Image 1 (tube, rainbow, N blue to C red):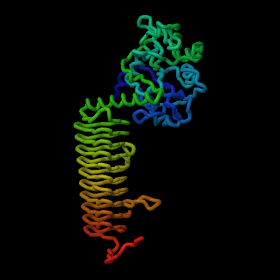
Image 2 (cartoon, helix red, strand yellow):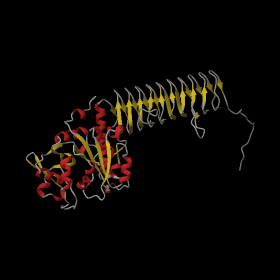
Image 3 (cartoon, one colour):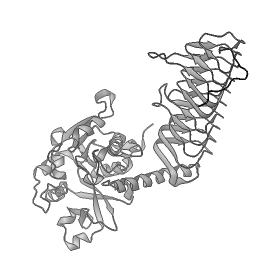
Image 4 (cartoon, rainbow, N blue to C red):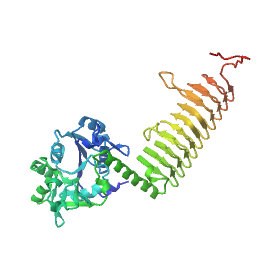
Length: 477
């Protein structure tokens, strides 16, 4: 299937450059600004993922403050196994946006369209960028712009008719220019070959003493290269992050947008303002989600699934009709691996249950309060309703697993598996020491410690004989 972005592509190879050198002083954090999280991903990772959607040939990240940390966080496969080649270049010291892009010149190829993005502007959409690339067409300088009611601090777009003549930075603007509402977003698409020539002509003769990337507009005009503006109205796409307050505001705006999209698909949200999706959430018809739920990684909810309040669910597939009661924690591993979690149709989970990587629950399984399941499969109708642990276990159909019982799966060096065959009843407060098989239809008496395989249908009891001493008196002070 051809993607929307791919199908709308006019032509030209795309090379993305991402500005990520700033210190982010106002974040008041030792962590580089572009590594702060929005919806569970680093700001910079959002931008890199968008570059992948553009089918970029290469992505060049300009680092500076915290360069080693940023580069380590973005280390990804390159070459035949990657979606694009990735380069890191450093801007040291930081002498302005133009100086930053100058550092990327040695790795830019003359045949590409260069798309300049900011590592602290995480929500720019691939479709918007493709429209900007189309406006560039490989021959024009295309700027992404937007109208702001209060444009203070932003570069103003100075036009003559429809053509852009210049971008004037706020501190260098006249009163008349400061009255202009159309601003430059910091995002452009430009042919690489003329871009290199324009970058070589930059100087720092301005109030900031910096090399402004925006000065290339006047060079393009002087060289007779058309400068066009692609104006959008969605401010969220060009919102930058400079402080914890702005990060929190953008987080809530982003989450609300996702909540609205889910509700438009038919999902019932108890309160759209109290939802966090930090990955991909796919919902079938008639899903309902209560307040304060967090979804991470890739989560799929089948038809009629109900998620109770205050649940955290990561990398899980939950089949139709299942109910996840409040305060349950489901933490699967990477999708497509054995560690992803599966919950079968009609299963009941929680409240206060914990499913860890590798939990595979069949239809109508019940996992109750304070039960933990790790790397275990439970077949149809199996139940562990209270205060229990199942680790590295294979549990058959209709098994009843008693309160307080555990599988002792670790011998201090290796993990071992417990097999509980169909229709077994495990009494309360039992310890099953793996490796172990409890035969089908068997019963383990409450309080037993079982270390040897049991025969099908057998009653197995392993506990000390009860002794009662009549008229015994407790010690007294």
